[in-house]
Length: 335
Image 1 (spheres, one colour):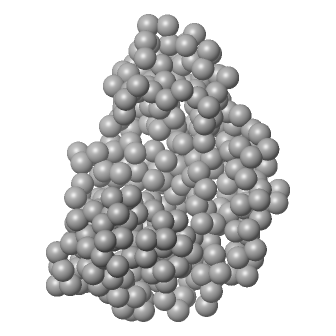
Image 2 (cartoon, rainbow, N blue to C red):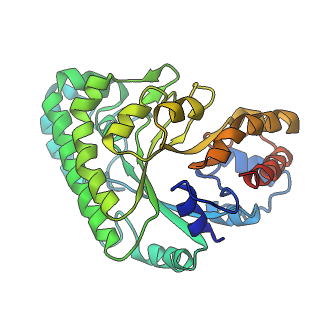
């Protein structure tokens, strides 16, 4: 069974020969720097070259950005593109010259997608893309703190941003699906931390749900599986995502308390990617095997691809990572 058929079958709870063997996210640069000192060839820096070195299934990802690369960056991590929100609506209008552009090679390159599609059509690759979600994008504009205040202080602007974002998303989806067939996508959201969602269900329903319901039917029209990418504890938010039409969740961070077994009980058809506790990889084979054993019931249920629950951290040696991959292959065949 080839990569694409395997993914499609598994994500529809159908029979597969084995679970896919992937890293859904690229490795941290510090992790790769360490591995270069431990035997990883120094010429390997590209995400997909490294995937092939480790004999992983190839899953190509593209990220379609609503904020153009020419936009001046915020002054520090967590700050917004609008620093003074006393006149936020006007500042947002001034920022529009950098937002929602559709150009020849922006936000995606047809040359790149042509290359990927040749592998996808042979069944050798899965292609997915990411869009800034309806929590993520306003946070980039306003900054972390002002964004959370914005649900109360700037409701009209919050709706305007997400309406315009959803309109742009639909244009992008329709444009790319004229010539290409993505297999799945993720909304980048990160709306949870270790204590759960950073907004209430009422706020989700008012400021986010209408825009998911506007965009997701377009994705479903093209048979694209829809995932939410949120760090933190998503146990509570999972049912919010389900009512929005979301098919799946990644990466299910264990340290934050995310639990696919708990979510599957409440949302029986929810799909998952991730859930392997990244902190166990540095602790050796015994701890890694225990982690795989805890996930084995979910592996056998289907609709689940085990992968690191975030990027592999730099404390993981190349030797331990190779042990992890060996165990991943072992458990992938117990489906």
